[in-house]
Image (cartoon, rainbow over the protein chains, first blue to last red):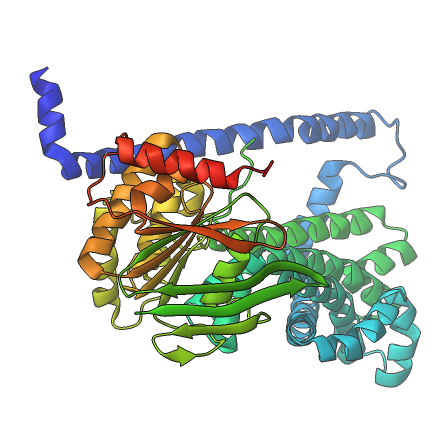
Length: 285
Length: 241
């Protein structure tokens, strides 16, 4: 009883303390659950890789069709040691990022204008929608014709791929901002610019980030297409090279590297998303 | 601040929602707009606030006729309408200008008076319905509006929170002497809070009757006089008439 009273009189300080210790406990359980997620998620892939290794060693699958996982790993390690790996990885990542930035910036500008101004929407949106229905890869020959086979045409292609999902999501994000929240801003006498900055932008951020993530995914898809068409370096070039030299381990090594870097960049965006959207009321599974 | 409505009507795509409403509100008066749903109470309030400017007639605030939003008007909506990406403190300071420190001190004062001291860092998703509405009330009051418009502000709350917040509203009113227009469909609420209750009726809604409640505050929620008003108001709202 006396203790209880103590707790009450300690008041604010006490609650602060319990909040801090609560946070510590939470981060510990977070770590535990992260470990658990990783463990559960790796059961099937690890089992498959082990099975694959065993089958390869037993000679069930011919190594010139499907080399063993260790062979592929050896290939990646040897490329890393002779230094060629970094060049390939860097140039591919650079192309994706350059295209991603250009495509996103263009989409943000056009998407916001179309979202804010009815006239701009009437002017541009039908055209953009029409262009969207063209499969973006169909542009490849034209771009190569216009810009040659160098970096410009590749980056442009990736930018085109990134543009559409980002544009659509920004546009719909702005249109989807709750009218009721805008009224709150109006009641406080905000002008249009302040409304955009303080209400419309934060409210459409979730949709913008979704657009960025799907845009990035498309960027990785398009870099493969661009590098398959003609490149002297890059992970896509490794694919073609492996095919021409009948070296499946090179192809598989390249595919695995694509998976790793693609996942890594998506994970960075996911982190940004989690940080900036922590306020969202999301379902906890 | 005084407020006057002259022949205010509002038509939505050919159907008239309110027709020829005339109303004079003295400075510091609490007016209740009471009526069944669909009689245009909220429509009228939105017209006064300036959020809706498509009405006919004149609305005069402190001697000037304008259809713009006045910066001395505060609005408490039926739902909290908090900005989900701001925490409680930032939501309350949203409409304020000045240095950050000043704004926050002011906001903390008001959070204290709505009983939410210590919850400044919570985000709207972490609040219960009653807490969120209290934040919304603090947000509207912190700018010390001279005219406060309330659109069924307590209708989604439980009976206890409701009574608590009604008393809070009266406290604030006593301190700042704001002019208050309260839209409600709760007769007890109107009786407890208002100096004058205006009954809107029909479709399109028109002013049907006015009740002046001169009883001194604090009022007894169970008093005979209020019960008498209630039965009279109920009678005048009777839809069979």
